[in-house]
Image (spheres, rainbow, N blue to C red):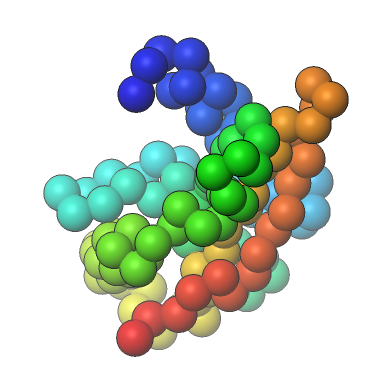
Length: 121
């Protein structure tokens, strides 16, 4: 991934954190990594533990950002979430998998939070 794409993605993730905080989420961790996966944001929305994937795009020429969260990517996030839950003894927690689409429009970032974007199988 060229540096400018990576930097743009990091800008989107930082902006998504601010968006979540402004909407009452409590950010617990960012860029949580395991061997199997990286989870962009782990946050609490009231009593629900949310595992959030952030997808940032300059436009929708190649589809909406959420479309890049494939079943394979979902499975990796689920594996990472399971590891986090076990590690922190939170297996009884109410959980949710969200996706935040971050789109650049006229030089500004716009957000679309998709709650329950996917489920465990």
